[in-house]
Length: 79
Image (cartoon, rainbow, N blue to C red):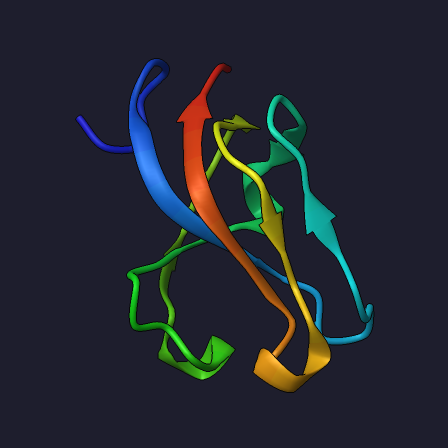
């Protein structure tokens, strides 16, 4: 099921205070820094639910301040 080890999710790491934050393929990110997303997410207030555990990025995403500075990509839960 969702949020179990081995599951995939489309997620976002919102870094409103950091301009130019990039997620590179293979990075590990704590679930406490992630929220579930969809391809239409435009603001952090529209995001649902948190993600627990540790996740690995499966793609590359660059966040830019003009676009609410959100890095959205696919994540794989690894622990």
